[in-house]
Length: 268
Image (cartoon, rainbow, N blue to C red; front, side):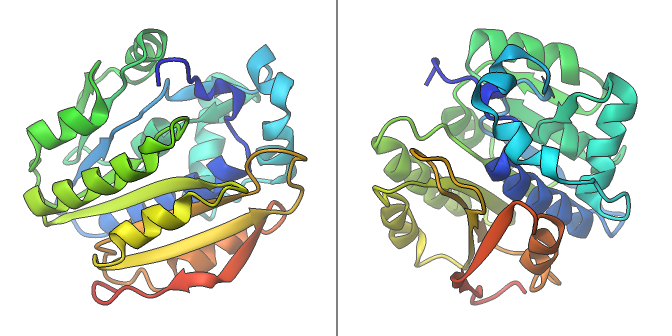
């Protein structure tokens, strides 16, 4: 949706869940010299100011990253601290900057963002060698360009889910992308809302080799999102304890739902 802007939610509890998992995945996928392709379907602007009116209005950053002391021993902690070193103490890295802090010269980044203002900011914040930035619908663009080279890769998908149809649309996209690019690892984020629409998303993707992880917010708002979910498709080797590391880093903000986590049939 072109009305959605992530600045209101940057650094909130859901971002911590998503970004800590993303950082851990990238650390695994870049452990060997072979290059990877990193793709985002809904990239946003890449860099956020937590002192901006949008962030202060919702208070989500205060309930999220504001409660954590980033640990430089973790990939996510290093990404946050690097962002602050480069852009000031109120800076928070969106997923493209989290990825950039962990990717290497041999890796490729492909970012899609349709919102004109967000795309302009993304171009300003992320332009440089190794990054291709498209003002284009991410689902359409990624399917049109896949498979990417290098063939080993990670795709992050985090739509706004402002429409009920976004859940089914995300499931259709994941299924189509895996069919066209079977080597890809996919990380799909979704909100946990009282309407529980995410259960339909999970059921659509159940036939795939997936690892599902959910967490509830320790201080949920009176209305709206109460938790965050992630579906990992084609989990890379050695990722069996990935979400344990994520929850150890975010324990002050998130409470893991162990009953919602299940192991992939292959890839661990």
